[in-house]
Image (cartoon, rainbow, N blue to C red; front, side, top):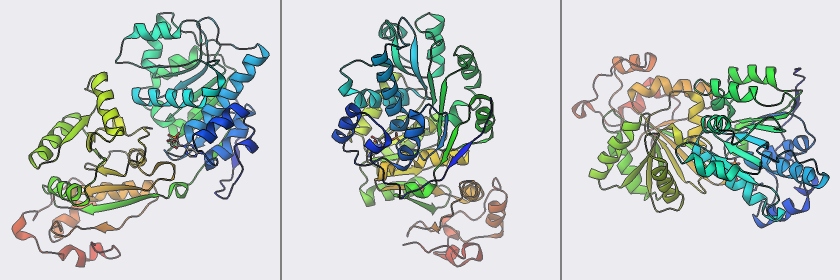
Length: 440
Ligand code: AMP
């Protein structure tokens, strides 16, 4: 297939209304009820092309309104199919397929679609399927055909082998969080699923980041796609800050920040499942109750914790990157990187949990000497540059030759991290800090 990519120039001054984008009355009525006063930039630029049947590659920040960008045209086209009698989702077929990387995202996307479709009087059936829960209930839900199916790849393959669903009549395929869907771990499943779908279909790819493997796939799969790349400035309500701290004092700094600011909903990212429990224990000893969220938890526990956090009943949630993708937690004020993510794109996904849809958000990274180099790489790849700040009482030790070495060679062990050697504010004066702002 050809790739004659049409580039759409982003325009933040675009002020078209949802009606001007060509959406029909039942959708417009719902958007007004939801108080979506105006399309977000990605919606304004993509919806007309998606309605016209074009393939799409959309690089937009998380929280930019991606779900409605694919869901609204999908619903409108299904409505037209129903009116013209050409609905393809009878029997155990599906018409619109949305593939997502996590269970929580599957549920969240399906809930959004159901919400957008309330004025279709139950004409359009949306089902979410994902692992970790009984397959039988999902098989029952799929009976009689499904208009829109939101699925994680593994469970979808299981349902296909049980003959609960067929992909032969998929008209539109959406890959949400496409970079994750096309990364190692999902490749085999995605390839197997693609082989079961018709060649002629509309494909919509959404992701905050577009690494090489996604670009290659778009060339192989997509037909003359519209390409929209929104700049990070389109989500400028998120403030990013980075605090330097001595190794061994991170937990104390975290405690200090949570208590000082009395944060009520704070999402803390660590790099391993056991680190979640470990940090929760350490915080508990310091009088802060935290819950944990990671892949070893059962589905009911994951749902309980996430619902509690979303409802504001849980103040502090410690999670692995499983929580970094697509989760929409309304007005989440603070995200903290206790450990830096390994990949620079995961940094963007993590911080994108806050500052969504124009809300003010704060993304903090706590870095010790061993993180300096890696954080610079994250900044470079994401084209950001942040001032290194220090918090009073947690100033980093004097910069020694060894710690400078640690900045250049990330794994070199810093010397002089003991409290005795600390010289207050010495780091601020060292050359290495020139150009960075002082702590507040
Ligand atoms: P998403 O990027 O799809 O996860 O959307 C992030 C959040 O923005 C969700 O809470 C949506 O309900 C909300 N949202 C999406 N589009 C709009 C809009 N045009 N106006 C206001 N809120 C929106």
